Length: 266
Image (cartoon, rainbow, N blue to C red; front, side, top):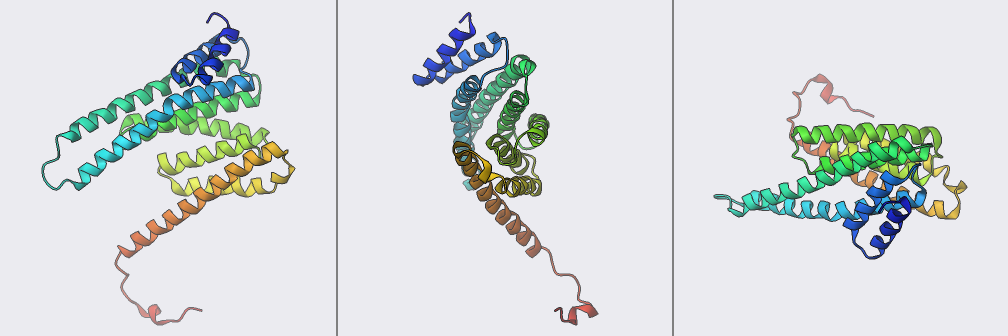
């Protein structure tokens, strides 16, 4: 792969063959060899390759982590010796995810962002780095420095991408909505700030509704799908927040009665 054209061809063939590790290698070379910004087709190939490489690893980590936690919680005596094996296996997958993340971020920082010429290029670069640092953060131990570093790095990249999108893209644009969706998920799931996640999701949903009818048909469909996900998340998150509030309130003893407690409220 001595030319960008050769790397592009190999990336496309690897996708057809569903050899995503090879596809990842090809798009990395493509990013290095291309003299200008990536085209829309090349950005899509880049995203597809890494998504198919890291996706199974994220799924595997969830399965192994859930199994480990289930055994740990259900054990009433000495923990099974299998727990150590599961813990080490989980750490192995975590390291693989971190390695993919580091590769993505390095390629974007060194070869994609410096060649960006317009807002769309920069939004793609910052959003990509944000998403993959979020993927890393979600598998790092909760109270670890590695999780904090990855989470904060993702947050900063999301902010830069979101600010660019807010300045330059229509409110119902699918790229802007997809970014708002991921940004809100990061606040809710990774940063431990569900309220801010809901604020971001609701603001994106409410402002996009007014601009939806102005979109061409293909963009209308894409944006409508993201809006539905935003609404589903909002419904779920709001219910979870209200349940947490009710649970916490029921655990707190009522305050001492005073004279005002006998007054009726309208």
